[in-house]
Length: 289
Image (cartoon, rainbow, N blue to C red; front, top):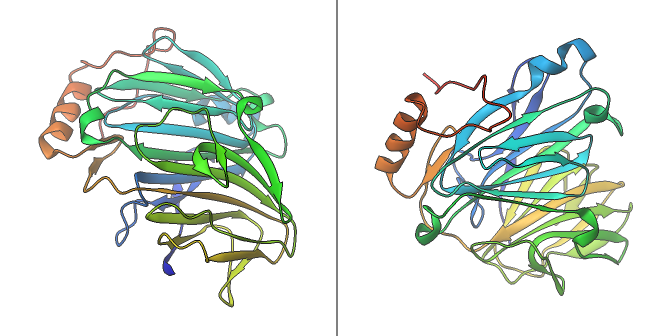
């Protein structure tokens, strides 16, 4: 059954780059292991403002970031030396583990092609046994991901297992993540098989149990497979879920099952003990506060 509906809050990252922030939410911190959901764009920034909108090097611990573009392009560089252009449909899975830093930068006109930059940024909390794993970054081209069409719904499996498909993306706990495109009037049940599931409306308008939902809303469900979604208009939905990992503490870009580990990460970043991307180390985002 539908447990909760969360409406995204607007957050301004500066210089015209705003996001819809969905998770964490005061009354719902996580869905399965997913602990953070941002939807940026679509946005086009003037050429003279592009440099100011760049996300300068910043740190992470205790999580994996999942960058997925609906349009545009992002230039990723991290402290492992990875230098990767991210294009629509690709999966870029960065596991922070004990610590990593990275930047996300933009270039005109490529970053704003296809109607403007539109990015889904989700974070996955790591199981306690993996929170201090070695950092890693893996790029999966869109062509490597399973795709199918079902009852008027186009489905790309970004990660995990769902609808009889298995993604090649390596994960640390049971979860799934789907990019779906719906024709008007199409109906489909959620995949089920996980304790917690959610549907985020990126574009369009959908219906469930007689109620209508619009872009920026997240529908949170339990494990039921009889929860049916119907698209009232042509729609883009991001569907995800998995098994809960237990309580996590969050400060800025740090996630951990231990408060003292968060404090250590704060001190390490403030003192310059995190490595920076070797080709992007002349500036960084300071610790908040």
